[in-house]
Image 1 (cartoon, rainbow, N blue to C red):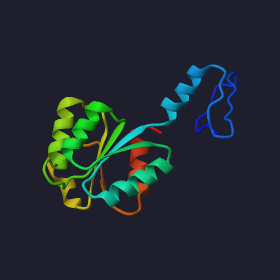
Image 2: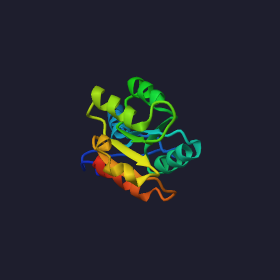
Image 3: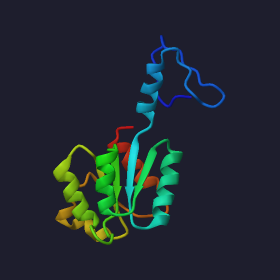
Length: 152
């Protein structure tokens, strides 16, 4: 079942494995582009990355993981995401430095700063981010912000 309406003139079916069965295969590619938004999660804590990856994939997103600011910048060059979830406190290049570098390269990718420390919200160096979410095992606020920023 598609999570968005199709014009009545287009018939759509999925086979038993959930594969697209449009007669016009270009419509299948349109479906994939429309549904699978790519999220890059940047955090040095593996358990946070795995939690977010699992939750976001359950919501229908494609998810990549980077464990440092340097890895994030490399991943953005290799496979530009539709949105970045970025931790602030990381060893080496921290999230604020990573954010500044990202904004210098491409201001078109929305960034959500995601940290356990709420005081960073008042720090002017974080104001370049599109949203700020305090880390929690309840990912509903994060998912809500992602959907808002991607206009889903």
